[in-house]
Length: 599
Image (cartoon, rainbow, N blue to C red; front, top):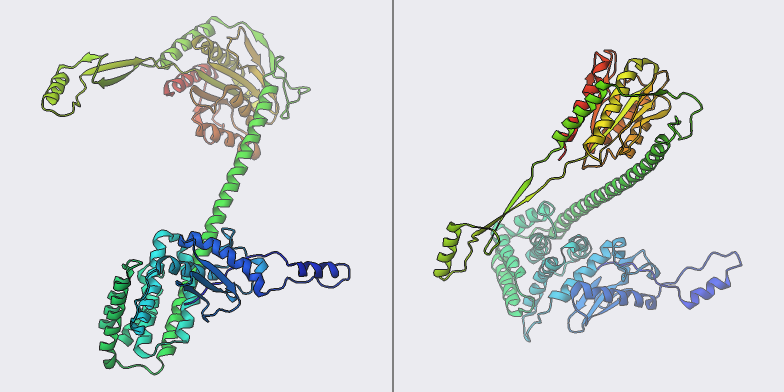
């Protein structure tokens, strides 16, 4: 049958090296590696190595040379244990460019590899031998049925080779159609077996073979075509060694043609009609394969682009985490220094005006909030009940009687009469509260209530759980830590003023996120932003990006505003406070809700 072209890259010969050395300094074009029959020996040897995987046989030899003894592009000789392969199938590739031993190299020459896979299918499954004295015409019919049978059998063990077998059909079938050895009705029947037989084993699709199916039905008639279809379908189920059954199917094939042929008119241009129909089939398969290849390439490119985007996103997040760590380290310094966005001390603009002792009302508020937080953090003990056939545990008499009954009946006892209840305490979650307060000139009304709220929340968190942390940052263009993420309760209230310009909420959120681990689950997490959000577009975009990351991680984000002209930061829960003095209560309520929702 037809053959395959395969590509491999061989090393240059000593003569080639000598030519290159001779002309190296003379300005002449470099010598090209010469293609000779000897140069194809390596390609054949490497094809033989791959044939072991394709056919499962280690006793076969592959010969690859320009032209073949059989005249076919490729052929399998069972008695010689040889697969003959025409080197012209690899055109325009040269021997030194072909490396079949490298898995994946076959993708460069799919048509040649398809022919090789076809011959490997013959080597694996065409193992029956014709008996002495068999009718040559019947043997020829059996070999015709064998073409699609071996490909179907090959697909069972190597389904991924379907693409190559589709390609081989274009290389192998067309020469048989244009230069037929059969004539008339037998020629049409052979085309049906070669094309429609491959359809029925899953090599070709029904839509692709419609042109041949319609023409063969018109030439052969529906009844004869149905009979032939039944014969090749039965042959597909034949065992590899069952020569008797294969020859029986072939005899039935010949008898069906002999019976129906006299009554069927033969079109004068039958060969041209069959060639045209097969050409339509091959063009359709080529278009389908090209579309599949393009879709696969698009999918591969999409996956590569997605992987690249994910890598870039990971790198960007890692860079942001490093920057946030550096920002937090510079902001939460021991001296309360105001820092610039790059972490260096700011020469001016510190909003802190001093400290004062907390009032009795603030101390009472901190105590109330501490009790509320402890109540919200309390978790009931969990109970887990298990049963077992032996102690310890409480005896269940119903289950014990059932177990005795099962044992008395001679069955394997399955009842488990002892019940054990295990109670476990659920740890109370700690609290993480970050407060970012805008100290631009429009936020003076928030200074006193936020200073009070920051002290109340920090004091209450420290009294509630030793693992709880809070921190407050005042931001305009620069950043200043009003309270720091420590486990000690602050002794005094830090007072501040709002007389700054511009805003840097993005870096403030980064510092609070890193210092309090607001993105990490396992604690009641809350970020409070006290601002009117009169920002520029870049300032808003940076803040919204951070807010989205926190809310995605499960951290609650609350925005407190004091005037009706305030803007809403997307992603935050907006709470408008007509009276600034209610800010401590609002923040305390939000913190309690955050720890209550923690699971």
